[in-house]
Amino acid sequence: MLSDIAALADRTLGEHLLFACLTGSSLDGAAPGRDIDVIAVLRDETPPAAAVGMRLGFSTGYARLHARFGLRPDPDWPGEVLFARDLATGWAGAAFRRDSTGAIRPGPLEEPWRYWISMVVGGTAVRGTAAHREQALRCAVALVRQQLSTLLPAGGEITEEQVFTAPGWWQDWRLPPAAGPRGRMVTTRLRQAAGVLAGRGEIRTRDGRITVSASAVHRWGEALHTAAAAPPLDAYQVQYCMAAAQAHREAAPQSYGKEHSLDEPSIGSS
Image (cartoon, rainbow, N blue to C red; front, side, top):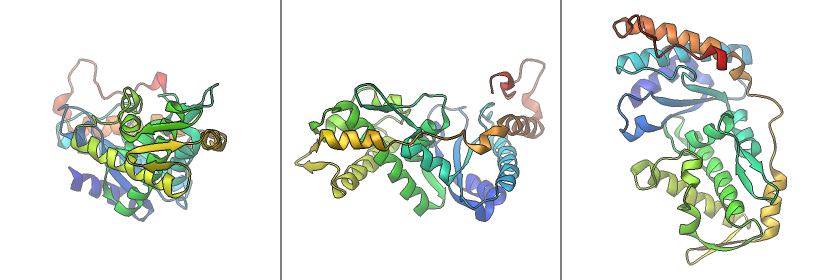
């Protein structure tokens, strides 16, 4: 599957691709029958009009890939394609909200920046390994800041284990089970992120404990940037969904009967 996804990214996105990664339950080898979760990030210099065409081609190939493995693609999100600047908008603040106490919280589930952060930090690169590693670490840094601000909105000291294994946090971000292989990979990235924050002087780490000041937490909240507009490629989501549905129907006609087809996009809710 990894090689097939890499080939799909090469064929449809080519030199404009910064990185692509596989994530979700398909990477865990669990939940048979689930769709394949793929995120592809385009270089910012990619012409927007060309990017829309590439996205359509990616959605079509994504659907055919599912047919090859006997799966149904997600009817509303046939893969994820975005610009690098969209991901940067996410980890810079669009994936988060600041509450009345000053704590940083995860943004609404329906907003794309939030699940892009989760997909990248919990993904395995199929193309652009170095770029993915850099962006996954940036996402992890943003997650650690969020977690520390929630647990210590007025600053203080806490153990690393309390930070990285706090009940509900992984579920809030739809991260993989911490005890599994992908969960351990995410934990490693989070620990690396804590090291980055310590190196910048934003936190202190010693003997398995993390200390953060109230002023640092305040600065994190003040530095959050909201999104000025919706991600541009998402404006054509219905077209991607329709292209994917048609491609899957053509590639796997035997799976379609008179009953309602699961591959029809929910156009009314898009």
